[in-house]
Image (cartoon, rainbow, N blue to C red):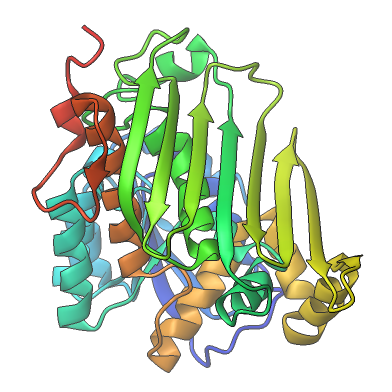
Length: 379
């Protein structure tokens, strides 16, 4: 096993298998290598070369077992945690099988590609008591949770509105690297794949569930089945509005994402620009003067989470695994839990449905809606 450098509250290691050995799986492997509470037992991929490449990417995992069939791996290893990093269209069948056989889940976004399947996984978690930690990475960044608490407690007054843009450019080489990329069945477009993290964070920070979605999508540049550009407005139950832009039709070397939340007496802006993070939090004092609160939150984060929280900025999966470990042992809900997975899928598919039908739709969706229902939208 790899050397463990970060402490965990878990007294005995929890066994883990990773299903899917693509790009994101390496982040999982690096996170596992830093946590004493986890032990990687196996990796699964239909391509043996992908599994071998993954295990060789981080020191200490060369002897881990490899499987080509996920059911065989789950049946033989009986892992405490199954990490699902396969294409989105396969999430449901693997997640359901893993939970039916007693495993907790770390499930990459989106939870599933349909509302009914997401609801089934969410309800299965409740029935079995098994934990699901969603790969909504932005919830695990430093300071974010502290700001969320202060907004929820009303320290900044009423939440008025929020906005996000995710300009995560990908060239044709990215989409051609795998046949499933950019398809309605297995991946979705810029909103489902690249922007769902940000939508989850925005709604979570604003502290209210979406009740209505209005949206438009377009295919401007990329030669894919789904959208490379989407824009939407959400109305939340508390009356606040959330504005969304997600696209892959931008320069691939200039990835940017920005989140803003505006309150009666404060505003937060944070984001990434070509890999460089930034954050600015301003609050209005009782005397009417504006004060930057970055220093306050940095000091508070060190007191509560210490250096570990800042390591999560480099690899948020470290925070997700630590949170899931603690949740399993302490029987509590992860920060990005099963309901977060269901809600984000329902919101995203509500956005797609609004774009398809050309009018606002109410959320949560009353009837099932599947990403494949968008097939032929651009024909």
